[in-house]
Image 1 (cartoon, rainbow, N blue to C red):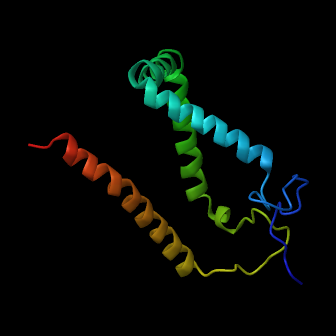
Image 2 (image 1 turned 60 degrees about the vertical axis):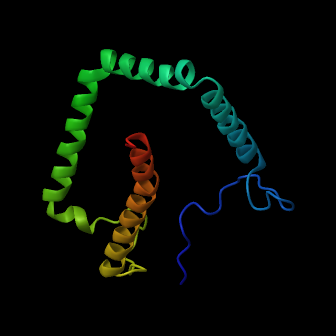
Length: 138
């Protein structure tokens, strides 16, 4: 018996031919328009546009929701600690109603997570380190 992956048979309208074959044209075009508008906004109005908006938004969030944010983070930490302490939490099945054999071993999962972490670090520092050196050039 083959187990189907979850959420693969959703009624999403996709293009059958052309450049967007297999993708939702509506989602792709709208996201490209939004990202293009943000890029143009950041290029032509960097300080008054993006930086000012982010600084104003951060100040507003901290002024209005700082205490709530601390309580929410504390709740998440307590839930994570509770799940780590609860002995049967590791045996709960998230997507299957029956006991199934995992596709990958624990070693494979740890290897994938390690590789993802290394990749994220390399991508982050591949840009950040040269920019930092360029900014503090003697």
